[in-house]
Image 1: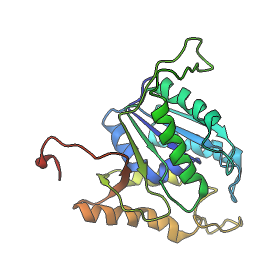
Image 2: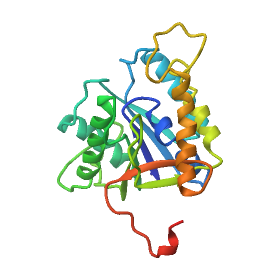
Image 3: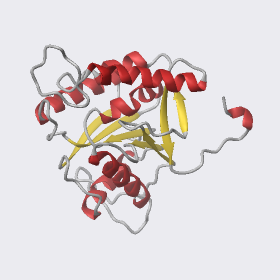
Image 4: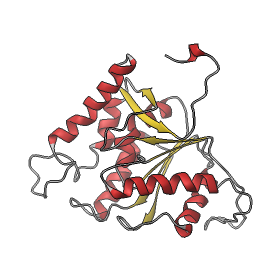
Length: 240
């Protein structure tokens, strides 16, 4: 299946937190969207790999994505090397996305920056003719494919965005998808250990960050992204 957008996160819930409303908006516009989680989040303090599997499936259904898969790389210990790049190249060539969205370029969790660079490098390498790959489900050699753009969502750190997408009308869908991860986020009845993302303040921050970015571009809600190359427009009047 060819996708318009492939969103990739180091852990299940990264994509929902970083660009869930943007994905929901594009899906409503008829775009084909897929999600790849690099790990199962097995080192997470709350829940476990099995609960994350169920939560990510539920979240994918809420968003309405066309496909979601997990690379099962080692949480906390995957690296940006040839082995991991080749596995990701196979997926990029399988889905042939026009746009890839991935982790923040810098963040509190070490996997986020690692995942960001791994995806970015793999997107470039995927376009090289002399790298041969076969997907395990298909017998033929894959054709090279390089996405037209790679964007990075913003996570824990308040990185200044290069572009902001108007996601007004899609924040409720994003919050439903995020809160499908019931073991991870605020629950006053939970007896699990506290984490930086399990507080009510963190859950509230998802919406007020989007409100603030929306304020800055003159709408109700926004999601910000950093870019790897200059955005191009045909006219100054294309900019809002």
